[in-house]
Image (tube, rainbow, N blue to C red; front, top):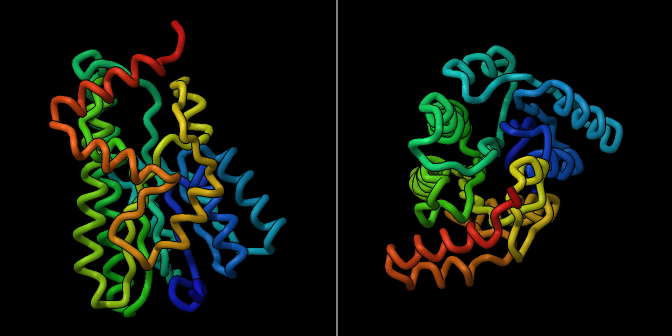
Length: 261
């Protein structure tokens, strides 16, 4: 695959300051793409931008934008409307902690929905329309294995990741005739700064961000869904259980892997 020809000249990575997003940035820069990196915190964002410039000589525009803000897409468009963005990677939306649904502040839950579902919709709609008009491009929506099951104490997170999976499947079908590739990249346990901050003990298999990014980019044209990190057998096993059995099993696994008090 000629990434520059199919997806260039610019790639936009929402959630590009660390983890899988930063790994995608480095790998795409090596393919010759210019980058727009969007994230909330300026420090880590600028650090990744400087690293990519130094390693690859790529042009990188870091944009400090809170992707859970209602006007996030408008803030990004002020910079990107002058650019030809041929690849969108929406990598935002990590789970920072676990708590019962009714014990979470409602605004925190709404913020997570804006980040994972509403923001993803707005970015896919805006940049997808431009790609369709050009007849080429790509969209990666980064999801989670929690998209396949309601996860106790992470209900809104898992629900929003299910939204990501279904949206990716739908867009894959709609945009395929227009030369636009769409992939829902479903992550399992991945060793990222976000998972470290959450203090959730990860169960095997644990993937590395560079490997997950490499898988996603390699299979971008093989949508609609790619399950990263060798987790296909686990998803298949989960699908053979009743929904009640599956939820109970996931809950038990969370108890086993909960951080110490």
